[in-house]
Length: 588
Image: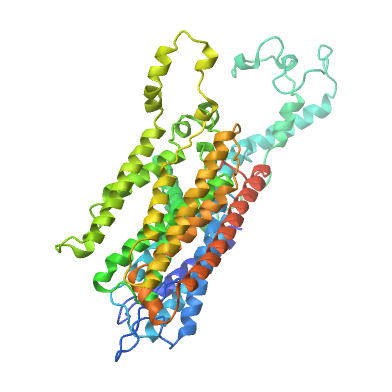
């Protein structure tokens, strides 16, 4: 089994190195080594010039299609399942991780071949660098999983070796002597009733406790008798010759195992968990950068507008999946899954002290307002401020103030201060009348939803340079307004019937909120100036982007639900199996 794992690992690593070797010596660098997607359209083609994007390049297009398909298969289909199995500590995680490495390596190889056969159309792009970085991180993640699996297996074998007596001359002689005495004296003494002969029982040791028996206590020769338990212990002697260590075991014990111990092992495991929980987001960054390079957008000063739309839209995109995860039961141990927050006795002090989901949302909104107020004029740095710049800064101020108010609402200390007047004036009233309402046990903070509602309304009526751009902005603005309305309905339901169980309540309105956030985030990304200009150049309208986005959103949410269900299946299987060694958290 170890040799098979080594062979698979070696093949996967060699496949990962092959594209790097092929790419060495490329005249125009790693221009398109990891173009993973083609969601964004290209910029319009100026007259009298050649192709300005890989999208419009017809030569070797089949290679690019294979590259995109394999990368989507690796990063969107295989990798999320591998991450969920890793969180569940499943025994099937290593084969799936190696499958991911193999598929990703093939996609890289095709991308490198495509680079060699096509001209460089996007100089010094960031996608190739990002792609190689996340690939090496993913490879390190898989290698760390292999090391941890070996270390765990080695610990199990060490435990078995400790519980099994080694084969030596003394044990063999003792075994033979006990056998002979058992044959010669098959009868018990008259004072042995035959009861209580279980290990560590009172009748076996007499009136004294076995814990105070001295190992050096001597007994007379005629009184020495071996119990059946002693015979059983000697029968546990391993009569087989110990198996010699394989090359795999020798390599790991010599080069890895002796370093991954103590604090180093803890840091090693922490780094593995960090890679495990962030690798999908890293892949998303690589995919988004691939759409920029493949579409040929964000050249020159336009990079700031494209970057702003990609970053902000990507945040709402990820926010939508986190909202869907909350509905499915992720973060239930933190009280974020629309459930009653577990007490400190149930989940421990660290998780019990975690802030609510609404506080976290308010903090992110406040942080965005703090930082973005200095970035709204970045594209026109040094030029005069325009009315549109002031509008964007006002939105940042709204986020700053609204997020701050949301955090204040979530403060239990602030709530106690606001109740001080009532508590002081009713100190002699009935104690039952002074009890906290049941709604206090659950956070119902409308500020994050209100801020996003206002943002959607502003963007729906925001003046743009063209009718197509105005319609696309109106689309994602309307989706954000839909999110806010659905979230308000969730709070109404929770206010009428607050959750009383640690299990997720799964309000159906939260499916609508996650759908609106994901669809709005994708449309937000597409609404950048370069992509809108490309859509106009190809004669596409706003309905095209709307229908494609809605279909893609539904497909992604369905696959995400299946992936989380696979994690639940793995937890159930490992919970019933002897191979489960350690608890897997609820965090998705």
